[in-house]
Length: 111
Image (tube, rainbow, N blue to C red):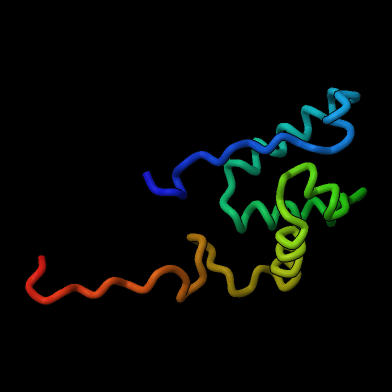
């Protein structure tokens, strides 16, 4: 199993409402959000968080950081990537062309 196949831990929301246990509907919504995010890859997580920041009533980056565990800069990066329509990002796979490790060269005499 490679690192991409390993399940990601589900973040526990750190917003005031969830910490105080005041509103069960909000607690459930935030738990569902974090479960969903745990199943996405990194770019998808930051793009979805960026969409949440743009939706009315819109969460601030610091609110989303507490809710999702994603860094503010990650959320900001997602917004910047979404603005031009994800141009330059492949439809399939995670990496843009040229990403990842260079291919290993085969040594002579080794099969």
